[in-house]
Image 1 (cartoon, rainbow, N blue to C red):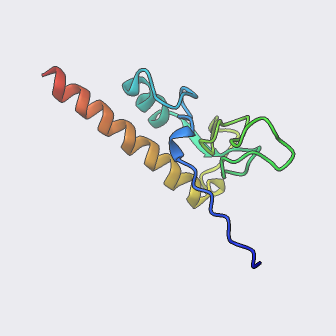
Image 2 (tube, helix red, strand yellow):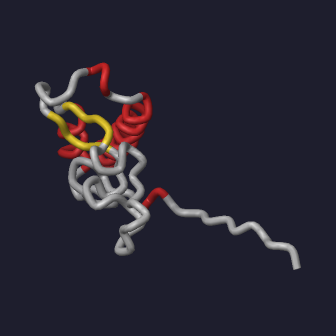
Length: 110
């Protein structure tokens, strides 16, 4: 019998927000401010992938960033050139998602 390919589909909804470490932000405006007012780069543990290592059997996501792939850095600990394109894209995706949530909540309140 020929071997069949195994396809694994994992929702990105399990990945946590880098600001609050929750999968669904309780206060998107606060998280948005946090993400746009600080320096972010690739997580030092998972190198920005968001996935746990092969030896971690407790979770599929990185234990440091909870799957966000981003870690906060101070201006002294990182220079702009060391932020990978993947981290920039992931950061922009978080900012866009939170901007949409904040915009929708403002529109509903008005």
